[in-house]
Image (tube, rainbow, N blue to C red; front, side):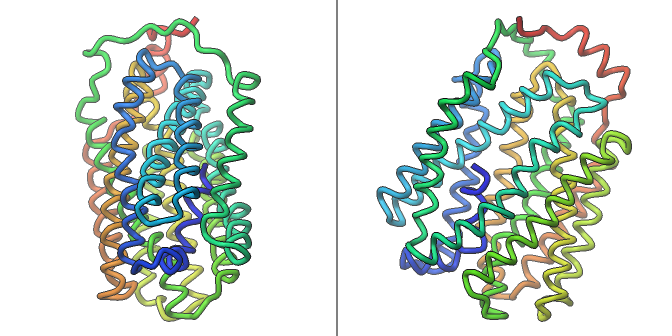
Length: 377
């Protein structure tokens, strides 16, 4: 799933050429995919009433298979829009149900370590999936990786009953108990802003490397590996320090690192080596931010865990959708400076909101709420 999401970024110019559309129009594929994530709360409410985890996990996988199949069978811009929209619903439904599944089983004090292991697959999709996708595209066309994704996902669906616990009897919480409150709402704004900042850069880095330095498809695969290593480092840092540092402080630290990285991209934009190092720093900060934010979010509204995580997806989908739509246009007009400046401003606002409004639950509060929370049988 993560590879299907991520391999598109470095190869977006090649995809645009294959579809016969300009880069800005190809960027709308990613924007539509992110905007489709706005449907995540509706899907979790309809399919997952009472928040059953396994049913939602399988639903996400089936939607993913459908989206991959539509994309490859149509091989057109209109078909790609529909396929990407289905993928944009599939992945967040799978993610939030999986994150809630893990959070149900792990105490808050150790949750960042477990969720960071789950998130290692995000970096792995660039380290392993993107180079393989580039190899396939270079020898066939841009749709060929989706055939692999669809077939592999069918096999994974068949394995779910073996590895994922069956849904028990879920006791739904009251509407009052599931209210987000000022802290939760502020966190949703923070998530949307740091997602917008990252997308501004990620959506154009392939075009930046290709137009400024003339990198080939295989060279772009190598750049994707470098970014994947930086993200793997961010996930490893979450595994190592977030539980001890505190989830809120870890998120703030990640945002500050990203701000530094995005700002340094402006003077480094004309140097391939320095630019890649700075980009790796920025994306390390973002990855540390987002992976640390998941355990924080999992306990902000513990009586409606999947629902709040779904709304976090909505906030991030809005941010990423705006970033994917504006990033290529700003890049064409202002070069890398335009997206980088917007990314800095968005993260500065996110840091301010986090400091002023978001309150992390203390270990004592989390423990008392866990004892009161209805459990699946």
